Image (cartoon, rainbow, N blue to C red; front, side, top):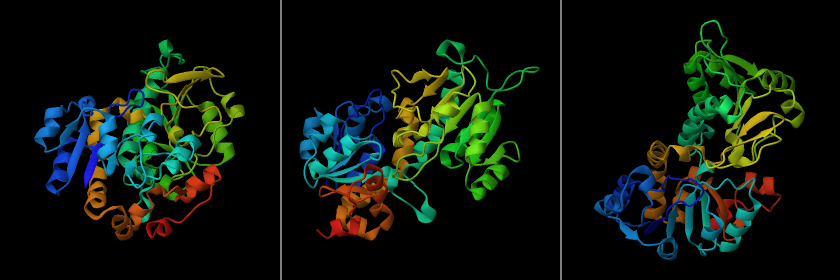
Length: 372
C-alpha cells in the first residue's frame, strides 16, 4: 500500500504523521511511504533521514494526496486538504469532529474513509492513541498555566509554588483521567496546592493513592465545581467524552466569581471546550481574557513540543497504521473491534455514535459500512 504523509499546515503545528523509524517499519512490511518535503523538519528529521529509511520524498502536498491510498497525519485536515481527499482514500489522524460541523460535512462529501485516533479504543475503555497526547497536554497545562499567571501575560502575578512565607498557588484540575493525572504530577512538583475533581470515586481513589494524600480529591457536582473553581488561581480542565462534545462544567456565572488574573487552561478545547466562554486559539495567539480571567485555549497544545509528541504518538499509532496497510481498512477493522471504534466517517456516513449525537446527524453502525 502507498502511505502518504503530508506536512502539517495547521497554525504552528510542527508534528508529523510518521517518523523516519516508523517509515522504515512500513517499508519493511512491503509498503511504499511518500512524505512531503520538509514534513519532518519540526522534529529535526530531514528529507534525507526519510530517504535513508526507504521513503520517497514528494515536492508537494498535492502529489502526496493524489497518490496515497492511506493518508497518515496528526491534526484534522484543513479545508484545503479536505478538498484533496478522494473517495475510498483512507485518512488516519486526529479528527475531533463533535464541535466541527464544517469539517464533518466536507469529510462526508469526500467519500473518504476517516479513522480518528481519538476514538480508537482498548480493553477497559482506554483510548490508546489519545493517551500519549493527553500525557503531553496534561504536563504542558501546568507549564502553560504557570506562564499565564505571570503579570506580563495578564495573570495575577503568582508563582505556583510560592516561597517560604508566601502561600503557593491553588491549582484545580477537572477530571482525573490521563490529562488530570499528569497535570497533578506536574503541579505537585511545583509545590502548588492541588485539587482534583472527578465524578468517579475509583479515579479519585487512584489519585489519592498515587500522590499519597498530597492531592486533595473532591467529588464532582455543581456545588463543588463552583466552590473550587472560584477559589482557584489556575484551573485545568481535562474532561472527556470519547468522540463527543465536552460538557460545559464552568458557566459564565461561575467564571465571574473567579479571582482577577486567574487562569483557565482548557485541554478539552479540541472537543469544544468545557467552559461556557471557551473558543479555540492557536500557539500564535494563545490567550484571551473574559471577566478578568485569562483563557488558554490552544487546540493543539502538544504541537509546541513536536519532537516529544511525535515520537510518543508514533509509538502508539504505528501498529494500527501497519494493520490498515497490511490488511486493507475493511479487514483491519473487522479483525480489531477497537480499531473499528475509530471509524468516524465512511462512504459519506457518520459511523461514530458520539459524533452523530453531538452534531444531530444520522448514525450508521460501522460494521454496516464495512460490508458495502
